[in-house]
Amino acid sequence: MTRLAWLLAALLTAGCAPRPSLESGDPVQRARAIKRLAGTKDPSLALRLVDRLEDDDPAVRFYAVLALRRLTGRDFGYNYALDPQRQPAAVRRWRDFIERQAEEPGQGSGPRPGAPRPAAATAEVQDSGGS
Image 1 (tube, one colour):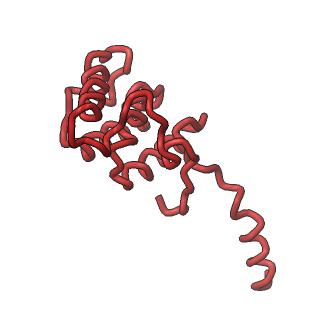
Image 2: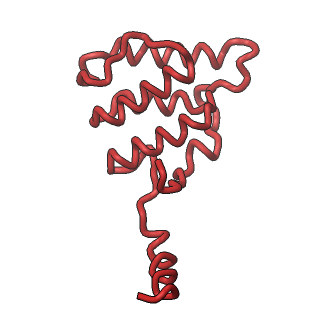
């Protein structure tokens, strides 16, 4: 195949890869979205990560709790390998902590329950292919 043909093939298929999204039906895409969002270190995304602690897929839960631990330095006894239905108290502790952080003075960058989410949290995440 000539260089031009390779270039055309690459351009035509560039947009065909699924985009990572926290709401994707594909757990791989949800995990990629978490990894990408965790890299932003944006505390306003923390509640979205807490929601993923109840995901059906253990890999998604793993990346969510890892991102939350890195973001907050906390643990709250959550175990990604357990069924989320068996640990509602740990998920509640995470949610309560994040909501308290948002309410404390001086925590202006934290998530605020009921507040509009930033565009980065609601938009699908672009994947550079190297994640």
